[in-house]
Length: 236
Image 1 (cartoon, rainbow, N blue to C red):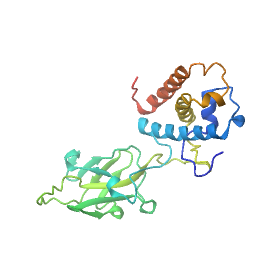
Image 2 (cartoon, rainbow, N blue to C red):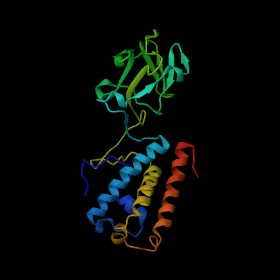
Image 3 (tube, rainbow, N blue to C red):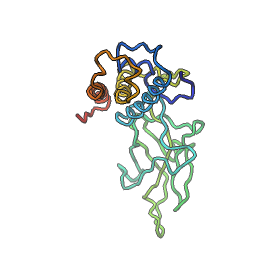
């Protein structure tokens, strides 16, 4: 049984269990195995996002209340210096909204930062399609033990669907994720579940689970095929 406190994910427990064995009757599966399926689906969702960079729900970079976890850029890595132009680490950034906790700060001293979130168009601009951030106002003077070009801007923002409707149900399943992505995430989660000793006691063996290792590898391969299509890169 799942609750609204379940971690966000791109596949349901039933989809994971059916990916593991097509003959599974999800309604007959014990709760403890279903909970494992939910956790594996959440883990597989994180792996999908990290592997492909394609999130189908807003994902935050850094913790709002912990600036040390925010994304930071140096001028040395900029595409240009005046204005300083950098490329954000994540594609498809969502327009910055202070009400959602998004923030951008420019370093004004060794340990001092100025919040310029509400100065879009004046202090900074962001091409959301190209994830290109331009900073027009920054400190240039070098002081002892403080190079203004190092860590000159930091920000916390969200990335994911841009201009698309996101549907997340009460169980925190992103129903608007494409069917092939949901299938791939279910396969990845099932590949992890296949190696669990207790799973084979709860899932009927239709011949697919005879070799858990080979079944897990087949599921991983199915996942990687779709992940490669979305990322444009295959590690195989």
